[in-house]
Image (cartoon, rainbow, N blue to C red; front, side, top):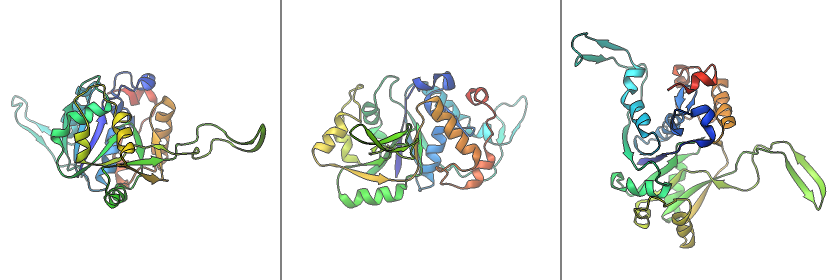
Length: 279
């Protein structure tokens, strides 16, 4: 199965953290948050990725083109620039096929999905974002999707509680909880499982927002179901989110780390925000 990942965001609320980086390249534990999303997908058997590029897409392309040059030992024969030996890595397991698709700098999420439709094979695919981390069970999501027979499934998560939560009876405070682990209700947490029939409902409109007309129409026609995820989920929308996720990684207790934990030892420690922001 393929994973289609939206990678066109600018990260306007992360400008003090990622002024020179597209949002998917903002580092968590020394690796782009996009890499963490892909590693999580790969831990569930997904090895083919379609990245929907937009703002500063060339930075994402360059990161993948330089991946082995950055991660492995090299032997260079001076005077013969065509003779560069890339030595085997230490435990590398990223046997991934990655398609980096230009979908337009200002194209919205639905338009981006439509513009990569020709790269999508098979009867279903995963569709998600490159700006949040989760330990959602993708295998269970797929089984749930196949079981209900509709075109689309979204992952419904309980958002982290950001503020003190009150229980009121009129103007009387019955209970107070300072920053509960989860706020009341559920929101769209990404990780959509989609049948390819969804693609027939899109058009080549760069202003098409996936989370509006397409999802609303799927819901209205009884083609959308929600997969409840009660585990970890954390978006990276603000500098505080960025710092929180990096602290989790550095503490050794990153809940989204669903792959080989020895990987953590091979990432670079982030001593401060300035170092983390250098491309």
